[in-house]
Length: 460
Ligand code: UTP
Image 1 (cartoon, rainbow, N blue to C red):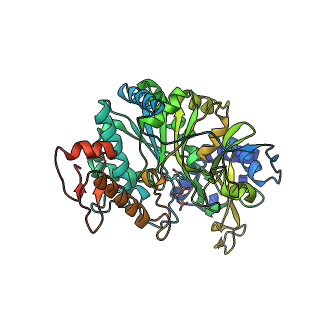
Image 2 (image 1 turned 180 degrees about the vertical axis):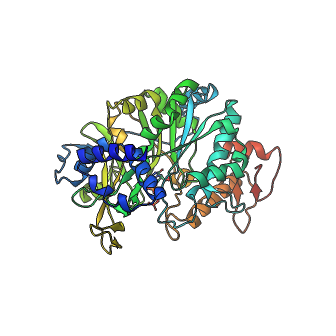
Image 3 (image 1 turned 90 degrees about the vertical axis):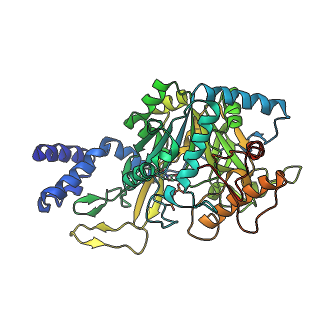
């Protein structure tokens, strides 16, 4: 059996010029050989040459001929009839269970350097509530509010799948029905050298890494999550990332604008703080909405101001999207394809003499797909500007900017703003409002009249 599998893989590898990865196969014990063969079988080998070619070739893409800022739907209160109409449309979708939540949590979290899935990281200012708990509680609170359970799909990767499932099990799914929560594992892609040859991390294993958050579409197809959504009558998917505890999951207003605008894919943005802030911005590039990475935005555009003195290209991407399920279907049918990006990295590898090398300089190219590359494929897209202090506080680094400390402070500051609005005295230390107590300020004010839980407003 193993011989037949090995022979079949040798053939397939030879056809794509990658047979060297089996060079040490004769030396391996049964377990080692099994590991290597099953890694290879899980890769779509026939797809690799096209992907590798796209990151190793020196072709430069044609420069865009026009770049404009996108039209922004700005935050406003329900006094604005457009906002009211959008909220009602979003609420109607939520009430009839037409929206699924999709949380991407397959990243390696290298900058945070935490031993475990990032979603387990405690950020609650007083309760130490984890990132997973914030997200799951928002799904739960929204499901309760609209009387219909919204499904939560959690994308993991091979390295953190088991510990992610365990985190949900240990917390009894944070109060969600177990049938409401689905886990799916994203794909892996091999690291290659500058000649495009796959690298071995050891004689019995390839150097693999998760295929990026853009791998979510393929993961939806492979795992059956896409078919499951269809069967449940899901029409839109709310995509968000594990590192932002302020993400307003299933925000009805955003949903309504997206649906009423007939958009395929929509994005929430916050205003950039200064021209040099390292965040991708949304722009309309040759007529299509796209994310322009900060390193690709020319300085004159990054610094340009409108007649009110605001940055013209200020729409900072916070990686919160809505996608129409029919649009995802088109991505999956292969009609629309995401490009692959390269990242130059130091990747330890086994050289041609069988020695393991720990490089001191970047030696390898990692392949990754980005979810926002789907945006220019959308025929219609809306961009909604929201307040950073209410919706964006990512945990990226162990310390300093975008760290657990800044996220925790942002959560506390939000709680204090709501307390101030309620005329409550502020505690000297941090404050915290759990999503099950209130998802927004209006709900906080309403629920306060029912009960006062002190500086921790919670019902978890
Ligand atoms: P980042 O690009 O910030 O990566 O991911 P990261 O893994 O969290 O951290 P670093 O760069 O290694 O320090 C943004 C979001 O996309 C998810 C992450 O889990 C996070 O929610 N992601 C990223 C995936 O789900 N899969 C990937 O392959 C990459």
